[in-house]
Image (cartoon, rainbow, N blue to C red; front, side, top):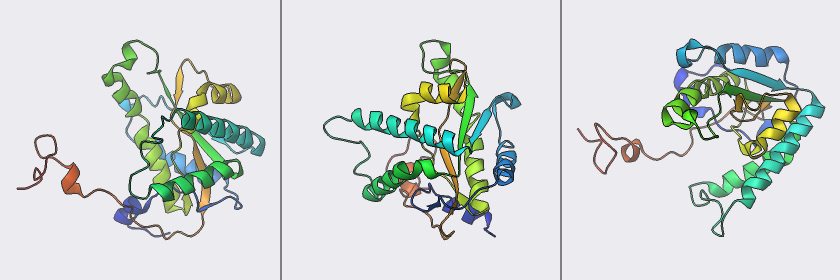
Length: 222
């Protein structure tokens, strides 16, 4: 593929329905994308992240079961009004694509599970917003770089977090020291069916940008 920087940044989508579950993905492609990803900034340049790639079909299937179980837990947490995002633009399309991925997750050629040390969930100093920002700010940009690198090579992924409702189960499956490392998400890796992705709907910048203060109507004016 030969995408400009702007095209790469505006057309890297969360891909669910258009993942090619039949085409193999070689380890060298995944490793190259990760080599690019770990060039992202991270707190103190500590390189404390860890990355697990799952490409054994049996383990992919077990991870998919955990993901589906986590999704069931998530849905069970809804109140009578349902999912809070049900009224956003394109919600129906997102729901159908999420269902498609849920039903086919076990067919993924590979999965990526990024890890960052330190837990923010138990009561303690690391629950402070400063430490949370430090931890997530040392991994999120690397994961996004990975997704950009995939896109540049004709592959895609989707940022999924449902399995985190059963994070301990995934830790047990993969031998992760759960008390030390947080799991960031679970990312299917596959070539895409076609590469003609387009920019997505986003709120106009004028409605979300504030100059020198919190955004208010007209705050983006000169």
